[in-house]
Image (cartoon, rainbow, N blue to C red; front, top):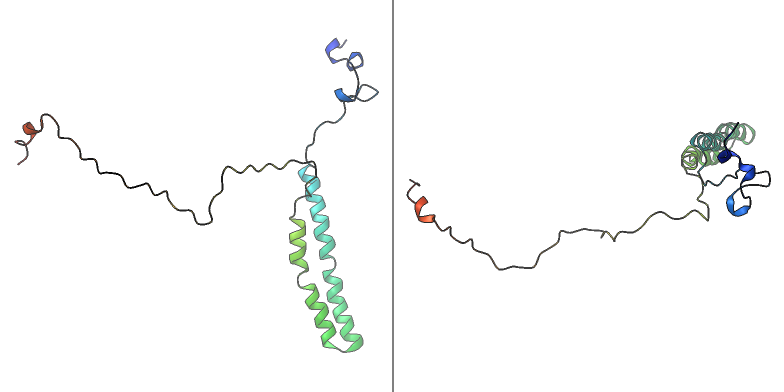
Length: 142
């Protein structure tokens, strides 16, 4: 027997209370995609981009074999050089930010490009006052 607190069928239902028509709670979190899923997606993107590298190298060899023109092969090779760099940049990119996701940065004050220490205004020099029994200590000093 379950307590009445856990019985959601007796609860008031409606869209404002985040329950569906069957009384089951509706997902209300806006949690991000789990890290494992993000990682798998990024690895897939990386492999898709890098999968063009081997065909490009084979295409350069095939182009040289067909046309005996080194410039065409060189152009294909040069086009394939930035592929690893692009693949890493794309794979390390975070998922796109949703439009309704709030921006979290709050500016506490601008930090100047070249920060300098504060320069206090010139103040009058305060001379220390002598102690009332200063004459007693003068005899102790050799």
